[in-house]
Every structure is written in C-alpha cells, then in structure tokens.
Amino acid sequence: MRAGQAWRARGDRGQTSEHSLASSTPEDDDCVCWPMDLRQGMFKARTPRPPPGGRAGGEPQPLAWSDYFENRQAVPVGDTRFNVYSSGLGGAGPVFVLHHGAGHSGLTFGLLARHMCAAEPGIAVVAFDARGHGGTAGDNEGDLQLERLVDDLVGVVDAVLPENKRDVVLVGHSMGGAVVARACRRIAHVLGLVLIDIVEGSAMESLHAIPGFIVARPQTFATVGSAISWHIDSAEIQNEESARLSVPSLIAPAGDAWAWRTALLPTEPFWRSWYQGLSSAFATAPAARLLILAGTDRLDKELLIAQMQGKFQLELLPAAGHTIQEDLPERVGDTLVSFWRRNQRLDIPVRRINPPPPAKAQE
Image (tube, rainbow, N blue to C red):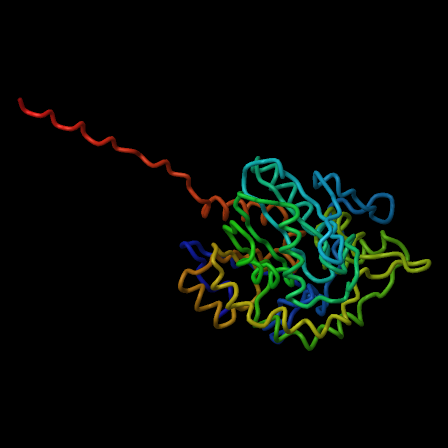
C-alpha cells in the first residue's frame, strides 16, 4: 500500500493528486525517497520549468538570510562552531528546532521560518548548519556518524536554549529526520517530532543508486547564479525564492569556480546507519509524531502498521519535490503550526474546593 492510500492519524485523509514528474517508470515509483537529500525524480526526464515571470536581468541573485531570520550566531559545541539562525527566542510559545538533510543547510528552512513566525506570534524557530555544511566550521567535518550528529544537535539546543521551559518541536528533513528521531529522548520538553520526506524502507532500498547521481551532477559552477539556476532548472528546488536563499550556502569558492561545500561521497560509510532503525525510533518516540511526504513514497511495513494504529499523523503534499519545506514553505509551515496546536499541553487551572466549615459544638 502506498502512503496516499493510508489513513492519516486523527481521522483525516491525505491528498492523492498526481505528482508533477514529467515521466516515470514503475521501478522509479517503487522507491522515491532518496537518502542524502537527492531526490529520485532527478533521474527522470524532466522539463525545466522557469519560475513565474521568468528571470529578469539574467542569472538569479542570492538573497540575504536577514530577511528570513532575526539572528545569526556562531555557537561553539565541542570541536565545532555551529552557524545558527533563529527567530522569536524572546517569546513564550513553542520552539521549532529544524535540522536539514545531507548536502543542504539551515537556510533550507528560511521561507518556512519566516511564514511560521508571522502566522503565529510567540513561536520561535532555530535552524543550524550541521557539521561540514554551510557556515559551520571546525575539526572532523567529515565525521557524520549518527551518534556525532545527535550529540551536535543536543549541544546546539542546550547552548541556544539554556534551562529551556518552552515546548520543543523537533523537525528533520531527510537525514535530519534520522537525527531528530534519535535525539528526541535527550532534549527536554519535546512535545512533537516531525520527519519530512524520509521513510526507512525506501531510503535503504535507494542507497546503491546514490553514488551514481553524485558523480553525474555538476561538480563546479562558474558563478553562484549558475548554481541557483541549476537547482531551479533541474527542479531539485521548485521555488526560486528559496533557491536564491539556500543554494549559495551549499557551494564554496574553488579557484575561479564554485564547488559543493559538502563532499557527499566520502560520507557513504555512514548512510546505512542514518536510516536503519528509523521507523522504530519514530514510531516509539515519546512525543506526538508527524510524517510529511511528497506523496509518492511507500510506508514500510513497520510505519504502515503504526499509522494504521493511529500512532502518527501523515500529511501528503504531492505537488512538492524532495525539499518540501522549500517548494511549499507556507503549506508546511501551516501544517507544523496546526500540529503544535493540536498537541499542545493545556494549562488547566485546578479548582480548589474549600472544605465546609466545622460544625458548631452543641451547647
């Protein structure tokens, strides 16, 4: 059974509209949630789709992080200084901690974060660049063992939210989902756990194909604008605004050109450990659970049973690619806010009943 045929927890149905891939094969459709955040649709024949209105003035230009987050700071944790973006830390509402996937950066959540903070005053968002990604720098950048990534996340949360008393919702995209699912038990006041476009079964089945895609994609770009254009034209990111924000953090100067900031092939020894056991970790996490998929993934057996038992909420957004939070930031943001509202802890005052006055002694 495919995810689109399953009932969502709490009695809602997922959407089942057609996905927008230009062509597909039965073999492709059987396995679409690619680990390493490299969407299976990239192997398909796709017609590049320019964004509405085209690109006036040539190549698309980068956008500033400060238009999407309030703060940016370097947070030291162990041997690494993590590049952390945040908004709303002075509020009293829930804190959404956002972990990106392999090869991406915290700016993948930029449009999402801005929309959520505007839609629900009091909300806080924290997004950071993982080890070896974006603006984070330190020793052992290539050490992406799951245990190390979990320690990094816990360390960043402890540093940014010391003595936190606010509810926390952990959100992870692809590889980031594997990290937040394991970190859930080590972070205080976790109310909710959200995975975006990652399913253990299809991820494990896809591992053999990833090296070929990494080798086949462009290894360098002449300009930052050409890197942004490639992501848009290949439909890896369908939202031009988000591509203009996030893609510059995915590349770094390499002589007269620009190359990928994160070398993915050397991380291959870690891939299997990221996803093995993910379904169990998610289904048994001590928090409310939400799984957001692009609509064409199959739930593996363990997740299908858990979903039929009502152990998690399933949302399908078939109009999006793998980076759902970039393609449909408002839809994902509204879904996250609704998820929190549905599961928030209610502060119900205790009504005190005064005991009756003692009976008067008879004279």
